[in-house]
Length: 436
Image 1 (cartoon, helix red, strand yellow):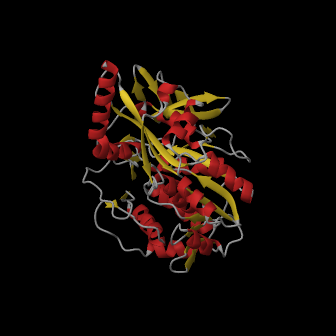
Image 2: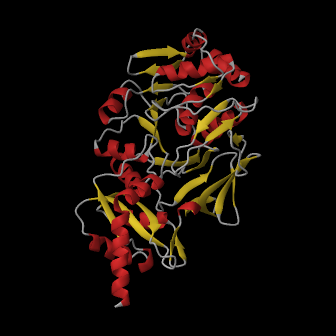
Image 3: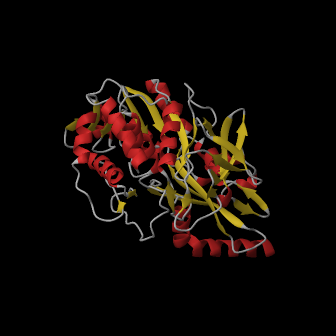
């Protein structure tokens, strides 16, 4: 902990009179010297763990107080409870909780050196600058927000403006005073800001992470604003992995850019991405796992490494099994998203009840009025017939979580709760017609 706090004190001393932090909700601002003084006056809390929460300047003060007092930091989302667990190994200073997008939330322990390495990789790769303050609208408790907003402020002197809300009007107000900004968001926010014409004109660097950035969003913002949104791919277990640093929109939605500075990538025998970096977390805690150890994180992301670029091909655990063949739901989702009527979609497999048939492909779609048959015919021109969804679930919207992710496991569970009896009855009718 001393290493992080000592680095912060050196940054605060070197940039003492420079602007450091603004809390838009209260209108209060601090220079680095004022921030250091205020943080040193923070009361000492009880317990060995500190749990900063919320989206205000208080999160920064609680973080600095924890570093000062040698506590293990475990940021939490508002209302999130931390399950009781033993303290991590003595050399670990930080705990992250995963997003549970695969259905199971886990806790990862980090050393100070690993946190600092992730911040260094991000700073070097993205070119974050002290004269382009970060406009903070994403969760600081999540790995993305902590590494892109909190650590650049405290370890590299990149100022932070904490917005009161990510809603379009609040974003406009938060951006008014500043000549140039860096704005990190998630795809759902970028789409909402674009539709509301709320992306501030003074944004110089635009970043999107937390979920794949749809090409439609990236291209639309570039066409109307000449602003390139840079897709950022990472994981709670290892921080930043790849970044699209190009100046123009991508043409392939599966491309997530090049590996970050000081990050090396390889593939295992199944084609899943393996991340090697000084920023890789120390261990899962308290349950350890061989997929995270010794500076290496073995992901479940199927990938292709080509010409220095990273292309994601789905998740190994999400593959759908249809009559002895496998297909990634990402492949079907990417094809669906090319139809102009599809706003959002998520695809998964559910058991058919017959071993020889395997799974039934289900597509949950948020769409304008377009018949299922129209979508089927569209996909038949893009995919083999066996990869076209058999069941369609139409919704007004597919809600993402606070981290901007649509959980395939969650939507699959909801679908099974509501429609499993109907699926089984439909399969039984199909079987009777086949026998006749």
